[in-house]
Image 1 (spheres, rainbow, N blue to C red):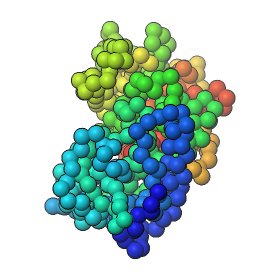
Image 2 (cartoon, helix red, strand yellow; image 1 turned 90 degrees about the vertical axis):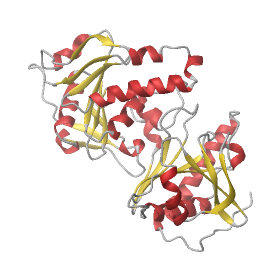
Image 3 (cartoon, rainbow, N blue to C red; image 1 turned 180 degrees about the horizontal axis):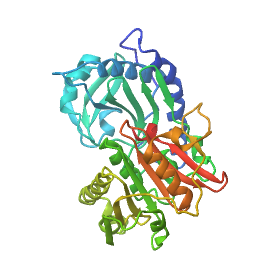
Length: 384
């Protein structure tokens, strides 16, 4: 592959140069694996020089403002011929912080990507698109100095798979080996981009987690086994907002034939149901759904059955390269919601709890049989 000429002689955002080779290696490995299993419509893996320049430009653009508003923009690295039905600009625009800042107000809505490619003169903007191939390099400018490198998950629908998160001089490279932790929940393995038998259907818990984090009010979602009322022993009775029978609109959408799911109407309906349930988590107390995605209660108060012990310690991990497991008191991981979630999972070991903090942190609590304690998985770096 011909190497592009760097439009900018020196990149001044040091984190870009540090992380670029790691990201190049990630895409090279996964694209090679995809080709070996026969996947088609794949772009060439991005070169480290291209990645470094793209991150550098996006970083400096993120610190600018257009009419007092910081840019939010998604950049996709691909040639226009691989983008379905794009909006093509008549003239190529040289990639620069100024160009991205000016363009941002018109392309900040979800699902719109600014198409970027290169020639012998360097990187340029060619237009916009809604359609990108699997494993296409995507760079999101989420807020000032916060960038996320990601790619579309296999089969296309749902939260993209994060590869690295850069915030100022902090770099978090996602550790996909976290999927091999003992008793790793399927929510985490799916967020890390691993295929499973359920990959062809949307992982609704991911969508709920993203929506819970987005409303920025904090929230607690409990997922309990369908057809088993044992969870009620850990909830203060009577419940003010119990739902009988369980509200099943979301569940019914997921039971539709897979062929019926591959259309915009189904996706819009699913999105509405996810937003409705996630919105309930902003109410004080816990929202409860079954593992069949039926709404059972909201605003519920978690209590500890008198015969059960108070949760004393939990193991905390984050799927980031260089991090290690920490055993600590649950209060070290957060406030009241985190303490309540840890207690609930210790008492109801076949359940899991999703906790969104107002500051953007997000934790999934599960019971680990191998560790014989509650495991708190910090996954905010996967949800940005």
